[in-house]
Length: 203
Length: 203
Image 1: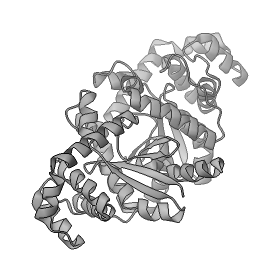
Image 2: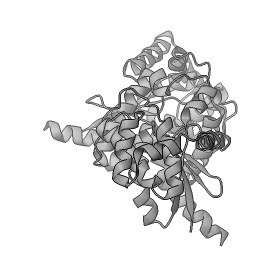
Image 3: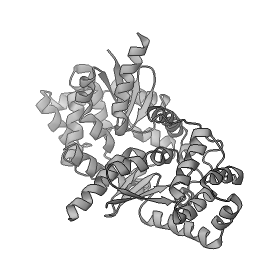
Image 4: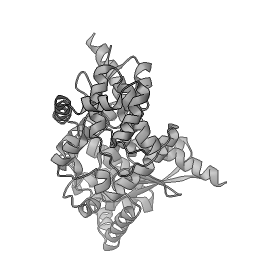
């Protein structure tokens, strides 16, 4: 079965669009998605940026917000601009790593993106994240404690370093088993097609 | 009839993709395209950039070249990476402005992009551009002289300032009569749809 790595940062607007549709889109063409939460912050910092390029470049930022409104309307997704932007996504990413080991990471990912960009909630807060863990049948305090374990923090650092080594510079990004890198929600369908074709050509 | 402004810089890779298909795509949905050549250089310079972001950010650049290869293959367009990149596009843009007044600007635009990104020709050179003017029935020396007239240089400066005032920060960009701005070749179809819907809603 073909697989596709889905690299995302919870703070990334366009990752919201992908997170809300990648499950169904991948299932429709028989692709297994591997969720890869990571942090864009250190990658941006390595380029000398102190915040999102959408904040550094006002015209680019203005277009992005309007583009998101239009794209969410087309996809029939609610859209709220989180304040502040970008949200601090470190705890959410650490939780997602724990969840992906335990089978609830995919649902959690969707839930966090929906809370942040659909309802405008502050996903840096333990209260918000705790409130999202409970409906998944998880104990918030215990789960957050595991997310904050030194070994789990280290995993997120390693995952982020791996993203950078892979050539990832933005989110969402998609990487096929053969190493083809696609950047942006608007490349998701092409990435899925590529993953399928790659496996067929190897047979 | 709905209209759409097509803002492009001859140095822009993704503008090549749009230039090669916008005529047919717009005709298919009854939209009139207004070609708006401009220069990204002054807009980038205002952000403190001395060259293309694809050169300033190596990972982003690597993805763009591979993305162009993949997209051109899908669109059955030849693709050559011009050297140097970005090409100096000032004379080509000045010529396009003259041509758009005289009815040959659209064909010239397509011809320049095809020469640059399909054949890897140096479009900063008078020889290259002259060779592209001749098949359009134009005298190269006379046409280039008119392109270099002070008033025409000033027009390109004004057009570039207008792009910046419109909120344009990259190319290609598309602007509807109602002022909706879409950035990127991957937004062309959406921009055309918007132009059509905008006019219908006003009726």
